[in-house]
Length: 81
Image 1 (cartoon, rainbow, N blue to C red):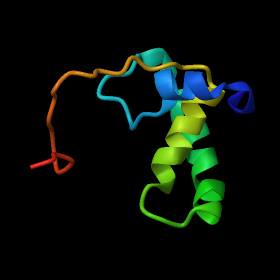
Image 2: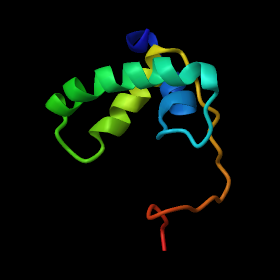
Image 3: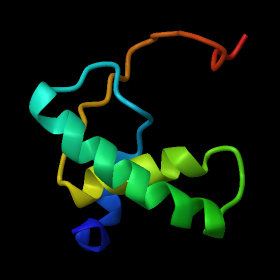
Image 4: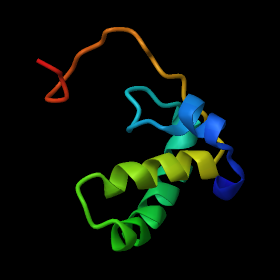
């Protein structure tokens, strides 16, 4: 299913990082798929965000679209000071 996602769908629902909230019924399948996708992703892209790309592919593969919050929410070290 991951390969069938359109570019528009990727940008709308799957170009994300790990969730702040997740439904309990999705945790096991997501963890299994994400951990399965991470090593080959790192093999192809051995840089810092390989696991994040693997996450995006895992949620697309499982057809778990995300709702992106586009508001001015600043957390952690990823803040544009």
